[in-house]
Each structure stands twice: as C-alpha cells, then as structure tokens.
Length: 428
Image: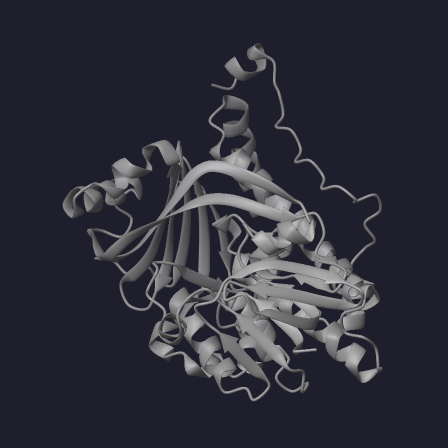
C-alpha cells in the first residue's frame, strides 16, 4: 500500500490526529485543498477558541502549546450568563485556587499554525497541499483515495477531517443529523474602556445573543449570533454605528467599545454523523460532530476524539492488530458517541430554549438560570463539562460512562413546557 493511513483535511483535527501518531512509525499522508503557504501562515479568521483543561493538556503533550506566544493565551477565570434585560446572572468561577482558570482563549489561526509546525517536522507524515479528493472507496481490505490530479492512493485506513459538510463522509455512505439554526455568527475583536477581569459574558438578548470572551488586556472577542436575515444589516454598519450598537446591546458594562480589525461571519449549522466509522474508514473533528459554538466544545471535542482514536490505534499496534479493522474502529466510535451524543443534543436544546421568544420559554430559562446557580451538584456538573479538567484513560472512560441502549438514532430534544393562558397571565 502507498500509506498506512490517509487523513483528508489538514485543519486542527487532521493535524492533531497526525501529531498524536508521530511515535508510531505509521506512514501517514495528509491531503489538504489549501496551499502550503496558507498552512504555514493561516490568515486571522476572527475565531478565538476557548480551550478546556483536557485540550491544554493534550496540546502541551504534543509540543503545540509552547509554539504559541503566551501574549495570545488568555485565561478565562469567570463566566456569566445573562438572560434578556435581567441583571440576574448565572455565575461560574474557578472551582479551586489550584486551578488558574476555567479555560483559555487562543486565536484559531495560531492553533492551526502551531499544529502545522509540529506535523511538518514529522518524519513519518507527508502533506499533499493544493489537492482535493475526488472519490474514496473501501473494499477487499484496502482503502482507495482518488485525487484531483488523477492519482490513486491506497491505504489501510482513511480518516475524514474535512469539515461538517464532508463530501468524503457522504461518499462512504454515512448520513448525518443536521440542524440549521437559520442564524449567523458575526465575530470580531473589540477594545473597551473598563477591564473585563478575565470574565466571559454570554448575554441572551431577545432575538440575538452577544458573547464577550476575554483576551489579554482590555480586549475581547465578540460573538454576535443573530437571525441570518438580519446579519447583513449588522455586517454593513459603519464602524461607529457598529460600536454604538454593540455597546448598547451589552448594556455599557465595559464602557466605550470600539472595533479592532475586521468583522467575519459564519452560518450556524450543527452536525452529528449517524456513525463515525465504516470499513477502513473513520470520521473525526467536525466531520464526526460539528457543534453550535454556544458551549465552546467544537475544537475540544475534535482533539478529544482524535486522541481517543489514536489511543485505539496505538493499542492495536501494540497487540499486533490491523489498525483499519472494524473491531478497532468500533471501540473509538463507542467511546466518542457516548461523549458527544447527549452533549450535542443538550447544546441544541439550550440554544432552542434561549432563542425561543415565547412566554413559556422566557419563564423556563429564568428558572433554568436560578436552578443552575443555586444547586451545587448542577453547578459542579456544568463546570466539569466546561473545564474537562483531568484525563481519563482508555479503560477508565469505558468504565465511567454508562451504557446507552437503543441509540441507533439520535434522541429528540425535549419539548418546552406549555402553560395555560390563565397561569401565564397571573405571572406577568
């Protein structure tokens, strides 16, 4: 065969997976449609990634963390969730003084650059840039990848890491649950008069969501989630009008706010693949699970999944097993499905609740904030999910997570409560 393993997509998920296998001696190819110059020095895209402690730990182990300038690593020490015009906030702080922060904020393009630099020095990995995949096939114990150049490569295992709208996942025959929120995320950096004190703010306004994520200094990453129908109006505002509007939406909490750099926009579509594996094939990163950004789990789930699959491959190699066998791949799928399924639908349910403008939904989310604030077990569960502090090993994960019977299809989100009109009127 040409390669032991072919990875389609050299974004953070594909690069991190390759780096995790640096010490295996496997002959790896990464196929990427972008140019080599774009991989070496990715353009700033407005996205800042909130990293959990597990992601931090993995990035340090892989040598990636130390490649990022500390001036661009910003700790998040506190998080507040606000609802509508209410001053009441769901408040999260570090669970102990031993923990420096709930998480860390790093620009996406710097993460991509650092992972590329690590993979570029690997002796067992080759990056084929400016190249697209025309077709993928798995049969008779071999995976075949046909490139835009007409070349056909053979491999023991094909890995898709080519976005949540993956063509290779579709060609392999794996469907996906998709939820189009009909919303657009507008992201940018903004400077403000008052210090943010390393606090992240998530403000669920009526018809829109405003998030401010603390960067170093009096600088924040601002994420405005708004109906796609209204997004162009916000994107086309002149800078002064935009500054004034964001300051108003945020209730002047940080004083005067001004735009730094460009505004970028991204449509919000969440995706969860029906399966993560097939014969000599596995999906990782957004190809497996593409999350709504509200809980900041996208990149974190991607690197976690890559680590899970890499661990199973290393285990297989150590025991003389075929790395592309379904027996090996199904173990990855079982673990990663348990981690992602309910987190995916739980996130979508939260989004539905906090963007629904009916009176029952408004009442329900007020109750949710107060319950989460005042019940320590609920608060601790949320903090644990936010930070992912600690790392469970291969066998510990399998023992810790409960079995999920009957999950051949994804569960439906729960319905919002309904109340009779008289009940609602009495509470207005």
